Length: 396
Image (cartoon, rainbow, N blue to C red; front, side, top):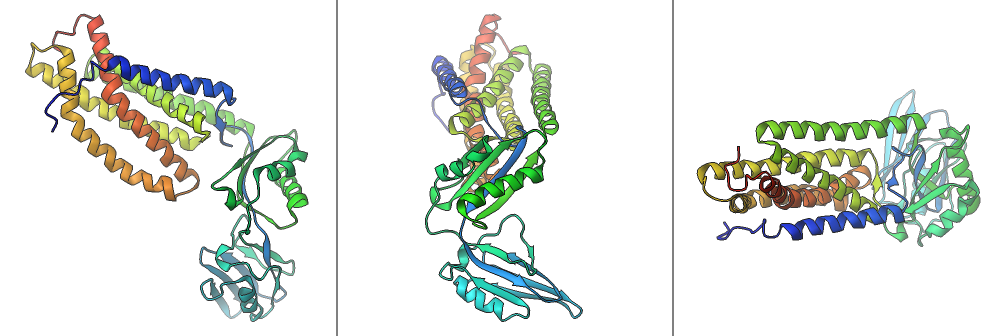
């Protein structure tokens, strides 16, 4: 418990100046970078996450059974379906540490042919991408392994130059040779035609089979426009309902202060997305709405304490009551913030894809939401109340 009140009102110019400076930096970056890094959700076209990796094995089957090959993080599995039932053979990478060892085990199975391309590659680096589990046939299935040296983003851009409108970004560290590529929709193009065009361009540059498609998404222009309008409507409705709720529960000054603080939270999160070039997708909208609820809850707790203190001590000025209310709530704010961070920081570090993006957005939103509810909203409440001549009166 703090012995002295936090002088929030005394710092009001500084805290608002810092907030405005951050938003101004985001506005400048928005124009310098040409807007947001839109995901395929909001920018119609094809989005693929690919990995450049050499082929280590080619596996074929010429028998009469249905044979499916699947890959996990530690095992290559062969599922055989025939008249006698289903037989699953699991080849663990710990027991077959190289591509050559896996090939020998596969060759021992009836009807399966395994051709070694690079037997020195480690089994633990085998990749499973688009098209797996794969049904084996006489046409060989290529198995890719993480390469020994990274592929540069310039090489990928050069490979896709023939398509004209490629947007390429590195995913993870450079050594992983993983890239996110996006293409706008061409006239008359379909998902299949775009995927074939990308596959052909990459194969011509890196060699047939040396590109693993980890994820492929296609969004048409009609759907992307609908998603944009629906997202804007969702945020606008949430803000409007919050304004009405706080106005009814407290009074107009409290409602405006809360709403402006929430607008700051949204704008600050968007600023970080522009500065760090994070992808703006439907996951971002989910994070924005979550943080709006989190920040509003914290603001309501503080405003409730302000109203309670004004009722207890009617002669105290509003500035003192705000400072005291925030100080009384700081332990609750710290504990709720830390427990939330304990849940989302591991996801931001160890997860991938949309979950990781959501967690990163939540971390920034948590910081900005705590800042606005403890500093910006109370400061704005003080200014509005002073303008209304209620700085020395009981809050209604």
